Length: 119
Ligand code: HEC
Image (cartoon, rainbow, N blue to C red; front, side):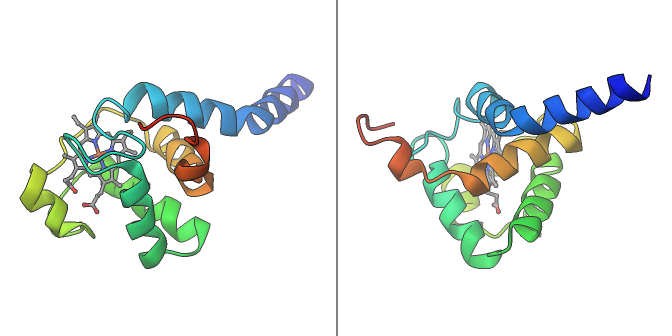
């Protein structure tokens, strides 16, 4: 039993970044394009703003995943985006899943990711 748990743990860690990417693309990109501001600010912009406020990964991940769990105006660090697009709707995600997605966002240079297309 112990060995199974260890295996699952290792597997999870090795694939954390890949599944973060899949989860991000499956759930956030419908509204947040990587580079273009459309129906929501691009993830490039969201990431830039959050990096300014939270340069350390643990702070960035903790704040963003808590906010996305319960979007609210008071805790927003993008008040201008709420004025422009309205408050982001609440999505049904587990906190752990959001931590995975937000650490992927922290680690990802969206500009570099998109040399060949404009999304
Ligand atoms: C239904 C559309 C929609 C989806 C899906 C969506 N968002 Fe948003 N999001 C928005 C809009 C609109 C804003 C801008 C207004 C605001 O800040 O509330 C926003 C803002 C944000 C912000 C800035 C928060 C702030 O400080 O104001 C973060 C961070 C964010 N989204 C993360 C995510 C993540 C991560 C996902 C995927 C799990 C996601 N969003 C999925 C529409 C969406």
